[in-house]
Image (cartoon, rainbow, N blue to C red; front, side, top):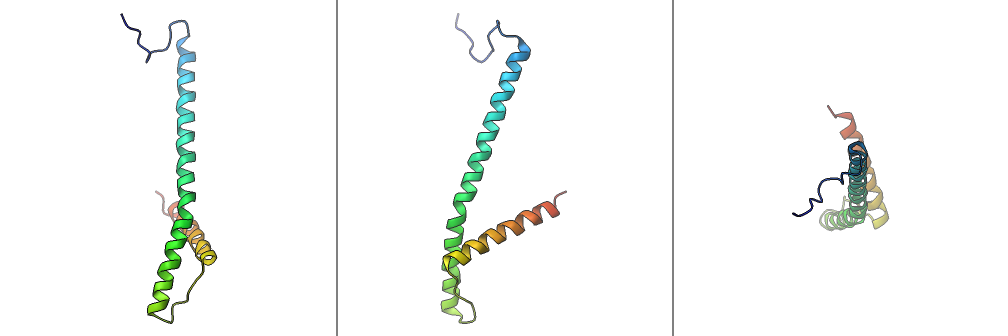
Length: 93
């Protein structure tokens, strides 16, 4: 007869086993949240670089469009993300 490892051991009270299981779920959710935040922060430089290149292309085609540098495009991306967060919070049901 094989042992079922998905069930808590019988020596441990059921309430303690549930508490440990809840703690593991909480840790897994925290790790997923940290990973999502890291991916979002890592995407900011890429978004800023793409914005800088597209503004440079538009500046090459139309002289009225200003050419912006990398630092300015990072600030634009951060401002756009901030406005998007406020809009999400404002229009949430």
